[in-house]
Length: 332
Image 1: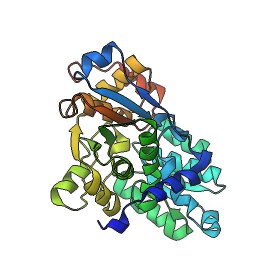
Image 2: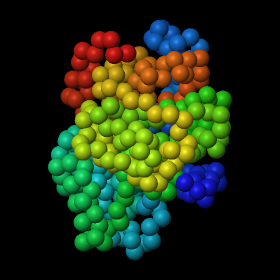
Image 3: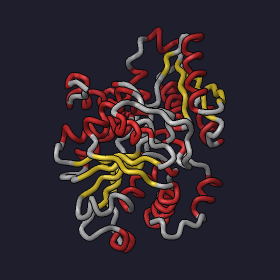
Image 4: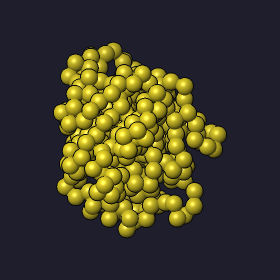
């Protein structure tokens, strides 16, 4: 990736200013207490960036709005479309509402009913598709036939600009971080955050974490080009991108210090911990960074000050309750 393709500090700051109060500056919170001392290696400090408190319940409105704010008045008036397992669709529906336009979104058959309802509550028209590959094809068809702007869930410069504002905020809220851990679905969140973090503090490591059943970025790093997977096999559906894409892959490859995989069991154990000890109700993806710090990154980041991105909370009460009581003994 060439130097002129990466995001500059002024560009990221301007993007955050343009977003205004359509998004909130989410809080940070330092984890302390008996559980932290029991589970973390000596000297390790975990600081959570709580994007679950973002409008629509995840970080996703940042990228959706950055893309839609760049549309001309005529383009915006024709409406937008998107494809998503849920969180991006909700964010696009929210962005369409606050910008005075209309969204027609394609959601996957596996999408949580609460997420479908949230899209409709924001005024979006919802179609259901069988899987990610078919969903992308249908959304592209809608874009062509109805002349709607397609808002990609994780790819593109403006998407990365939106997610970079998470890192931009975090580096101003917490001094002297040694590492930041970011969940990876398609890679848009990790791409933007890693770019912003490295601009602010080049010595700060940035680690990406993927579910074992949706490791597109691992496969892409191994081959040196964006790769796809045949199916998503993880409970964290919002981390289940069917493929990696060039721009987000390029930023991730340039700025990430490494990647780790976690199991569904590790994510569920971390979800239970976040609720038990911090009273945070998150979806499985929202627990991914915590699972990574307690698992494959525990010794690598021992004794460090680590920022953990808690990316979202869109899960229904019944599904969350089931995960809270699931037996995951020994996972965390």
